[in-house]
Length: 73
Image 1 (spheres, one colour):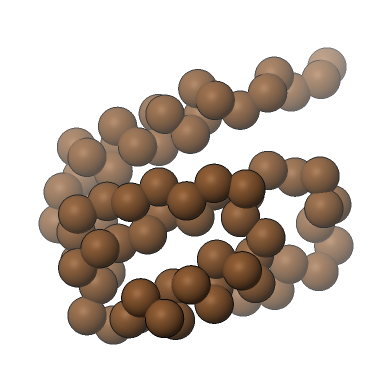
Image 2 (tube, one colour):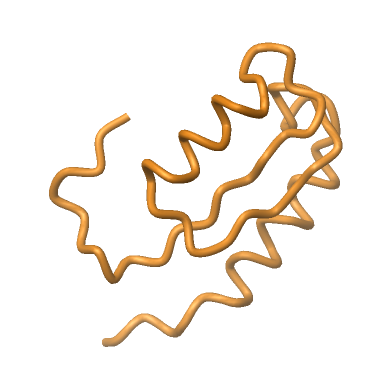
């Protein structure tokens, strides 16, 4: 994943899958630091929350979008 070209002011939220067998917690921590996440939200799923628990993921995404500042214009 590359963050080149994205402004540092762009808010970032990392959704951490708590039962992810593919990305262990230590790797997730490195990804969180690398992307400069402003917020980390946990979801109790495996690597693919859209399949494991789509309702919980949709709720989480609604929460992220609801917290975002309005877009100018």
